[in-house]
Length: 195
Image (tube, rainbow, N blue to C red; front, side, top):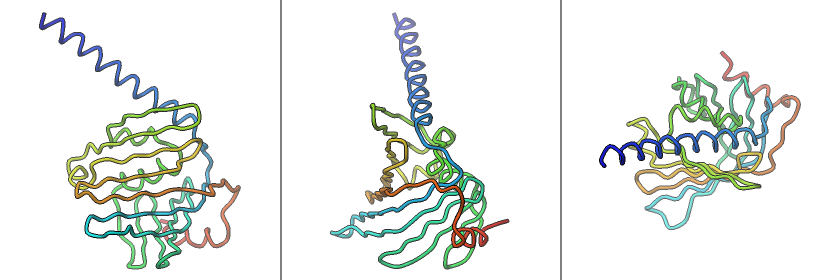
């Protein structure tokens, strides 16, 4: 009897893995994939020690080969630029692990299947929407982030990060567009992080 139960459990586990892969494949196929994606964001950071969330708004630009420009406009203007190897802020430039840059590329570039390398994923899809829950595989990252929840339609619309400390970040994406080329300002910004 024990062997029978083990066999059944093994096949159930395999079917769940296959189902998760199928959901990820379907969701990834839905997403718009273009070399350039831009839009607005609103970020709400909820800290356990504060009553009200910290709210910031701004714009983002994703370029398939150049990276991401993340401009916070309110309450305090700042710029963060990242590619697969560098992070540039007002405090200077620093090297980043490739995995960090790949997460931005996967999320904003519609390549969610790239996240499978660093996260265990479960997901659901409906006719007009989808949702994925990500749990970090990396032991160090698990000490900081308990789960990441992403959802959308043909675009990523919401990103929620639940930290182990109980703090939570929610970022909503709106006014998403896919221009044919970068503006002069965007091009100049990306030149700051070019190799």
